[in-house]
Amino acid sequence: MGHPHTDRVVHYLESSRDAVGAALADRAFVESVSRAAETVTETLRAGKKILFAGNGGSAADAQHLATELMVRFYLDRAPLPALALGTDASAATAIGNDLGFEQLFARQVLALGQPGDAFIGLSTSGRSPNILAACKAARERGMAVIGFTGAKGDELAALCDLVVRVPSDSTPLIQQVHMAAGHIVCEIAEEMLAKGR
Image 1 (cartoon, rainbow, N blue to C red):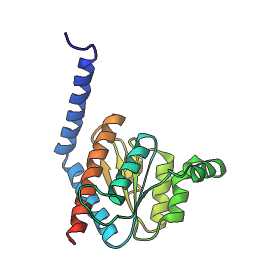
Image 2 (image 1 turned 90 degrees about the vertical axis):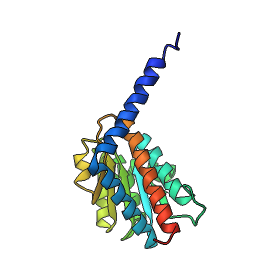
Image 3 (image 1 turned 135 degrees about the vertical axis):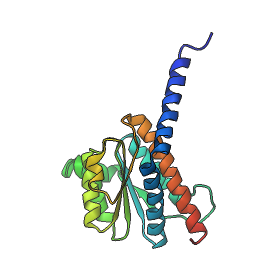
Image 4 (image 1 turned 120 degrees about the horizontal axis):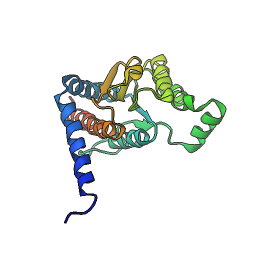
């Protein structure tokens, strides 16, 4: 007799497989990940930096991906300039208290972003007010703007130069595919920069 939760485990893993399969079959998704890797590579090659931001699980994903670039993915190489916004508790609470939570990332983009940098905003719904505000701030700064979102992320897509849109409405599944896409971007950028290509 199996464990009582075995069916739940199998169901979730099947859902994960199906989400990845749907992304793989979506030509627009695959091409957007490739274009995101190219943008990140070109930004870093030019000596510019990548700023990431997200809320909740997407905040953890933003930190994860910034770390992959700053430290290493597969290769031993020089560190790459990447930063996840919102990780400084003093800045986050001051911005939230004084300016409102909607300005959490935009304020940091305006402080740290420079023309030629890239901003990557992660929002599974595509409706997170603080991510939308940060996209607007990044555009003001002359930065490339990349959005990672889900099937219904039209608001975010409208503010981005490029959108990586997972063909799913399920928040955890979107986040899983975002991480897979982010890892692909990091791997390609790292390899291209290490080879001087």
